[in-house]
Length: 129
Image (tube, rainbow, N blue to C red; front, top):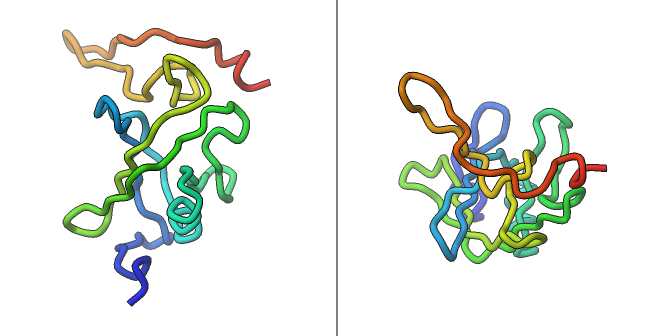
């Protein structure tokens, strides 16, 4: 059986994917992958996602230069979530979020409201020209 056939794809042919920084364990981002994105990620050793808004493959860093080098591809116990262990390239300290932050998970629930707790490392206007 093809390893891609073991993934439990949703009704739209997608699977959730979490990118985790290999060196720190930081959860950097969440995105979607279709079969081709997951195949290309494994083949290239570089994160490739499926952009639902654009309806096509999205090579992480194609515009920003913030490429994710993939060290491991893991599948959860239910075969319906992919975990990528990555090194985030293109900026030091690393930027994974389109807002110019290290991680997309920068909102912290505190005192009944969401607070931004991580700094912008680079102005998004300078990243996406």
